[in-house]
Length: 258
Image 1 (cartoon, rainbow, N blue to C red):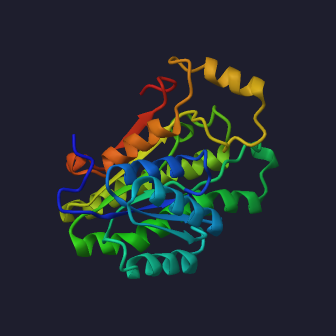
Image 2: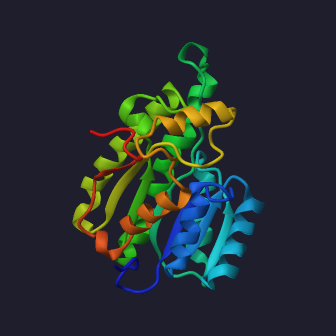
């Protein structure tokens, strides 16, 4: 199986990839292991730079780390300009829009500020990064976009986060399907993944007991590793996945089967 593009090296842009235990970091490393150049975008600029440096040292592939607030259009535009202008990087060929935040707050306790924050980071951030990096894909003849939804969008919460998060992640599914239809003729694919519980630090406030109960509820009796998720993202961005578009890829160990 080939995890490459078939037309030479390309750069994958991975948002939300500074955290050592995050899906984004695992995805960035997985891409580099397969010969992709990697651009890491994260609100934590120094963390993004450090992650990029560590991945470059481990794999020998070109990398860059850029500070970026995915919820702010100017910040995303400036990050795209920086990446597109970097002569050490091949053209952008893929985007893994992973940056997101959780929200375990009950519905009646959600204020408008929290609602906007969750929507802005998860949904608007996906929109802005897709819009910023799609032109390079169209111009250079290869494009793969993978967005990050959640099983919470499919079943209405039930893992950790509640209504604002589920609404944002459901919005990502609609965005993904519509964008996939718009760009299909150009050979660009757009897919979403919907993970269940994953071994990351996103569930801030979850106790050991909570985690044990969550794991016990999964038919496979384990949470996904970040590498499990990263490997699916990588495949969706490869030449081999060229006819897969507009899909929602459930990766939840059997916790939600539709």
